[in-house]
Image 1 (cartoon, rainbow, N blue to C red):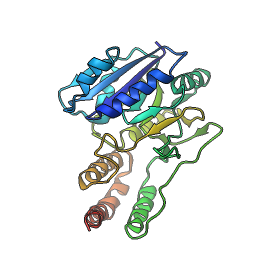
Image 2: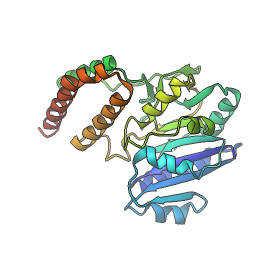
Image 3: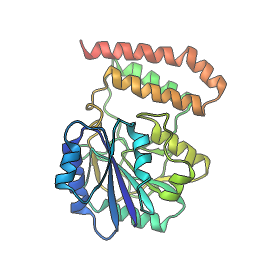
Length: 281
């Protein structure tokens, strides 16, 4: 088996159906399987899969495992030489799977591949970034505070014509050799949602394995589809920063974490409070 496409689903029945339709319509020239891990959905997703996509392997969890743990569960059943971890709120626009497979076969030195994702308006959207550091987190926080009072245009990764090495790739489309995934132990189960792909690629980085964005694959990502939409609610912000704190405690020095405990995290709590008040004005 060339590729195991693993999709984690939580109450995204229609989005998941569109994603699977796009895989079938666009994928040729590569042997693949699709594994859907359902995180205890209540919207009829499993029934839809049984009726419309009987060839898909469905793993039903009795609880919502979150993103990382659910992907770990999916890989236990995967037979592919490569794993393609794909969000349910994505749509493939071309023969993405074959393009990734061809590139990966020709470049075994690359441990993780991704592409420039497109939003619903066919414009580049968030696809990769830097691994977090205390300095970068503080700069981001300053920007967030300024953004409360001055609206900036959304940040967009640029289109590319050549492969580019990056620090981490967003979890919406992670192509990774099964042997690399197993070597680093998969996703850390401490994360429920957010930063699990960053943590995974931090550990891959520490082994000297490259992460690369390649041109060619075309994927629409309807960001936020599986997390109550694009609005950053208080619950979503709290979840995001809880995962960020797990990351910082795991990867930053004791000194950096001590400084952040008396400065950064109180400022985060204040930011969440102010941002939610402004949403409801």
